[in-house]
Figure (tube, rainbow, N blue to C red):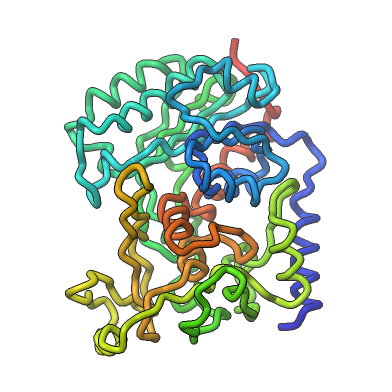
Amino acid sequence: MGRLYIDRRIQQNTEAMRLPERRPKLIDLFAGVGGLSLGAARAGFDIALAVERDARIAAAHEKNFPGTKHATLDVGTLSGEDLLKLAGLKATEIDGIIGGPPCQGFSSMGKRNARDNRNRLFVKFFELVHEIKPSFFMAENVPGLLYDAYAGLRKEALALVADYQIVGPFTVCAGDYGAPTSRTRVIYFGFRGALMLEFTVADFSPPTGLQKVNVREALRGLPKKIKPTWLTDALAWRKVRMPTSSDFCERVWGVIPPGVGDAEALLRLKQDRRVSGLIATAHSSDLIRRYGALKPGETESATKSVRLTAAGLCPTLRAGTAPDHGSFQAVRPIHPTEARVISPREAARLQGFPDWFRFDETKWHAFRQIGNSVSPIVAERLLKTVAIKMRSVKVGVRAA
């Protein structure tokens, strides 16, 4: 489809997000690259403040959310009063706090270390909710958080929000909400005030009749042939095709909330259908041969990379580690039809990010940002439930 169609979709989706009523304000803690932020903005919320300690990740978030205030700080060192000063708001002006505290100590993919200092940041999230007392909160983490080893930690955290009605914990699989990945996460939701008795776990169930998106559909329109010379960000801007007309494609190419979107990425997509992140990974001829011999779902024995199944969902993408934890690169899946690992842009599609969303210019940091993120498709569907109920009564209902 041509440029006029793309121009029209971007314009229509942007105009549709300009809601006339006040957009309730949120603080996003442990914001990462912005999966929760994007979902929340698409659901109708204003991201007043995003806090992320990793400077490289925070820079990517700021690029995609130029209308948001940013703080490159360690959440563990902040108080509720600090957050309000950073946001430039009063406590009564904050409607919600969202965030995904670090999950490495809980994850079954990692060492699952009950003594990992980062585990305490889960409690810190609830401390800040307790201090600010927004109308609601939503915390996301890995299923490993529910293991018996962390029962004391969970009890300590929830004791801080005893004045909230707690919904959950409940588990969500991204594939059930329209994202092309089987990534599974645990959600804690709490609400206080006039609406607190109106929420149940069923409210956050996947939409009925939603068509699942597989790997083939998710990657449609991206170039299959990634030249080994595309090793820099400048060379990784490539033309794409608008895949098909579907809810997933709408979110790949449009649904741009106010104050969201990198100007360069939006312009290049609109003008000549170019998107970033199609960075190549150089493979030896032997590795190319071994990758090419794999059947869908099979794992290459040396690299541990699994070949994606075109008709299936992408398994949970790994993030790798930051410089302060060894700088290990994540194992990357193999393209379903090509003898190579996927590019950052392909990983972003599989996680549910739009083509206009920007990540770090390097593969390592880009994959780290994508792998650590919440699918914005899941975040939007969960937070849309909250936004609709808040609007049905009164935006910003606060409890005394």
